Image (cartoon, rainbow, N blue to C red; front, top):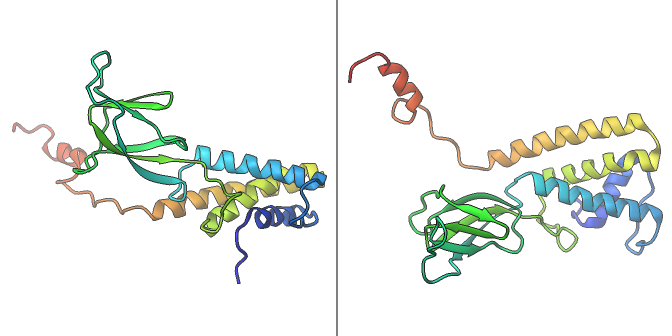
Length: 207
């Protein structure tokens, strides 16, 4: 049976790739634990703050914090961004579902001209609390990030670090491809959907 992706199991999988001994659930003070725990935190922050996967993307419907329209700004409504907001993916109308491109973000606020919106954004998951739903390809990505970070400090081998780093790069590339495949397929390109093709066919003609 596959191993449940808990924080401890993820750290131990990374330690195994470095050639270090395992940690048990009661070990929270050893040097190995402290090093692995910091590498784990760094991996979660770097991977999920800089990359968007379906796992760390969510949709929330927001309502403007102001009832009366703003008169001292280019946009009429102000919204409080979610507390776990990391990066914006897209904004859409909550009932007509068209994308909203005219907006401004300042600190923890977003401003636009609709009183209610759907916001799609990335967040940094708290895997220390629950990692059960973590997809296997992201589990491997986190393991490889931790392993390459630990390799020199725990093994002293630069060649092992280089090998593990290259494996992490491959894992990151594969994770991004697998996540992208879960999205909706693109519409086929033809004369009716592409302005470029239409322009090429009518170039030099008098309409």
